[in-house]
Length: 131
Image (cartoon, rainbow, N blue to C red; front, side):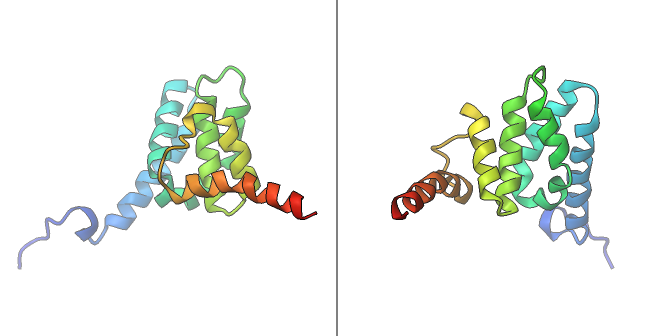
């Protein structure tokens, strides 16, 4: 019997490895070095659709990074927070953080996230018109 050399989704431990990867990135948010925190935010932003449950436990930390006036990646923290709130179906918070993300929130991106966030103000406006 040959040993399995499978990697990726065919590896029986793939999901566990991914979860450990996500947890490792989340732990970097606690680092005092802003460069490491930026790396964590950037990497988590790329995989948030898969790891949002793990990341959601760090929303207070991510929000605190956004609130830090001296943190150079405030908009990136806001974008990540927005995406996590989107997955939690807290669309008012998702919209607020998307607006705070400034140009990091790419309105031309073709995704359910962007379409939902862009539709939120229109829904609010329509509700106001109906009275």
